[in-house]
Amino acid sequence: MPAPTELNLALVHTRGDRRSLEFSPGMIQSEMLLSQPDRLVLDYARAMMCFTLFKPRPHHIVMVGLGGGSLVKFCHRHLPDARITVLELRADVIALRQQFMIPPDDWRLQIIHADAAHYLQHIPASVDVLLVDGFDETGLPPALCSPRFYADCSRALRDDGVLVANIFAYDTRYAAVLHRLGVSFGERVCAFNGIAGNNHIFFAVNGSAPTQALQMQRRVARWNGLGLPFLNRMLARLVVRRLSRQS
Image (cartoon, rainbow, N blue to C red; front, top):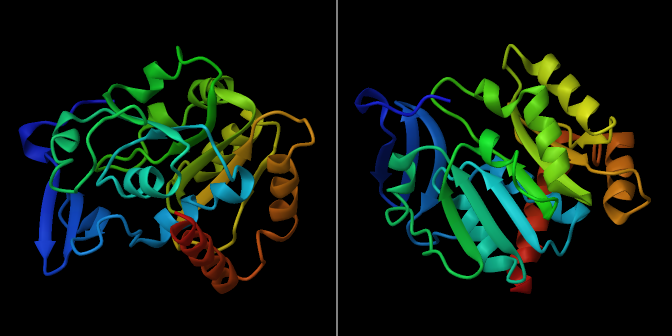
């Protein structure tokens, strides 16, 4: 994946109580409320937190892509038993962590300037949840949706680990990417229909043992979640609300 040049550095816009990160004008990658920096604002971020339906108490979360840090901040605050590793290719994005009120590295949180596709080739099978949300100004980079990448994701996950992949519905490679995901995870893949608009969030379970994660995957796959998009969006909000109240 190419590093950013001076012509396409990440853009930060603050309008009232909202601060957004954009890789090109008008294309919001992340959004934050200055008054509530840990709150999840965008539908797709709430949808990705539905991984807690599969893995309620993860010990190690790896995130591909930092962005404005919405998921990092939420997980750091509301999943206190989880260790979080974030892989971010762009140094200019990491440099914005204070503007987006991302907490400093500590024993639970580590943000690493690295190419995730390369890094995951060497990480041991120790990950409970792997969130793939790495985009650039052109969309999902080829290196983050290749057969090799998904195979490395599967190898890095524990036997009952869960991969969460954010894929744009209008990506011309959509069908091919979904096929690769299914091949790498033995078709143990599901999605909540209409949960986040054009952001299609897929959950893939590693391993075929009869775990809670696999049972949930089969349940979701049968009906595409709760079936109707508005019910799935409501479910995501309830999941986030429950996590917020627990901590």
